[in-house]
Length: 407
Image (cartoon, rainbow, N blue to C red; front, top):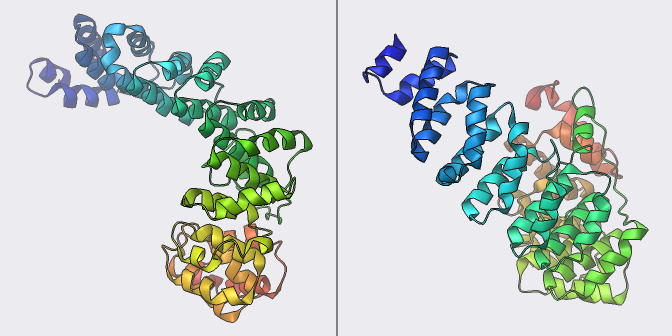
């Protein structure tokens, strides 16, 4: 009856057809297919395909959707159709064609393809020829896409691939590759915004923590493999200050090189007018900053929203009591440090009663965002000193009232 009302134009097409599609009404599908085949208007066809999305999996719909992606007349609707392919159960049948759109001259089409592919980067690899052409092309953003795809897919050739990326002619690509190397070997991407997930790595870690206690994170020993040192060293003379700073930060923090050239580059980064480069330099010296404290104002950096997180990280490793009042002040201002993990660690590590109260206040005031047990298991298990002991004792004694034992 509903289909009849649609045919009689007593009910709007969209409302009627989408409802019938959700009910898997086959006569309605047949009617939509008839209207699709009878139309030559790209927008009309794309609209009908969208209404038929409820039929999934469905060979008739998938065939027309795939054909539309090869039809130049449908080009104005490709971004819309590409987005639809991602939700189809037979997405793998569209994958190669969508990947080819990453190279399309129309930026809107390429970006639509990237939006679809980026959420499937661990499903299957983007064809190697496409990756290499994107990296070799002039478009910096597309070259970054290629690097991100390879990093997340994480196959056996990743290290070799990243070494090759260090010789890319685009500074942005080299800088991102350095961040990926850093993320892999020192668990800090040095502000390169590297994805936290990798196929074959993150999924395994997540499954370990799905039931019962999670494995506590040890105090990480930063280390850069011997074969990676020379390729990174060569980027230390790059024409881009951003690349040089990140290279120096990686070499210094990993302990691979701490010579004067590296220190000089880090000092330049600490004094740079660009806050992004200052953050990278601060990340590099985080665990060994004593030789740089005359090169920048750590307290001012801690109070600045642009550099607060990295400055707090440095303070956490310095364990200097004179920084405790600053840390407490920052703890009261939620906007001062975007990532409060370093702040919480610094407060607890200090073992100062006022600092511990500030740390507790963060959890009590924002318990939904900061799960105390998760924080304790991940960051305090390997921490030495009385602060960690005091904090865990408090957390356990207040579990019933504040979070509940199940937390």
